[in-house]
Length: 289
Ligand code: UTP
Image (cartoon, rainbow, N blue to C red):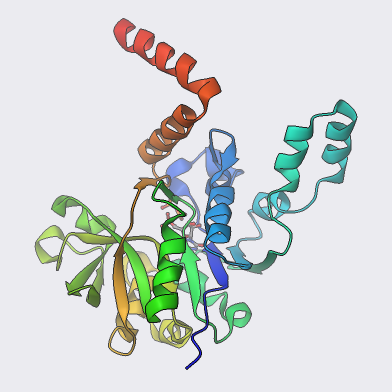
């Protein structure tokens, strides 16, 4: 039997980003920077590290900045060439490495994550594929969370969902899984703490079979009137092996203000030019307040 590897990732980026309004009135949430790198670029980098060669952006025409970011900017390039600013020139040219194809498709209305994934059906076709949510930034852990999940697929042909422990009082913010061994046997979207089958929450990395598309077409709008990806996955759990992948590294929920601020601090401390003055300033500021 030939096992296909995962060569395509879907990045759903058509959400409203309402928790970051008014900034996200014109700047897509996925373009918010972690220090100087937009969240979408960090997700693309992780996908490329995992060996993915095709990227599907499921976006909204009202968010043109994301597409523009991945297009060449000849006028800006000429300015940087004239100034001899090679580092900046490289940074804007490297947004999408050679050999990587980006497909753009639209979700015209934010009808939920499951619906956004369904919008990629024609491009993905009958291949197994990955889904990454750029606002879940996973820092550390070797080659990256998605690379580990792709490797798991290559060795076992098992699909997988990245999971992490959350406090029981927060189960109503996540898709929660029920496990038997490593395998996921049930899932429920945003359960009340007293009804949650565990405290293991799904975070934004998925390796899925193409059968998810037909399952999503049958899903009725669930929590919040949205078509939930969780409900689609729950419908095919009996037919496919789904592993819970407890990833290495730390996840920052950059869809929330606190998570985004924490990620910025962590990445700033990785940059030697920022780390020392930032530490000094934080100490001074905390002593003053
Ligand atoms: P979120 O659940 O964080 O929703 O989406 P959101 O609309 O972006 O943000 P808030 O809650 O209003 O602040 C997680 C990911 O799924 C995408 C988002 O763009 C984000 O990358 N998404 C969500 C879609 O592409 N379409 C949708 O209908 C919903």
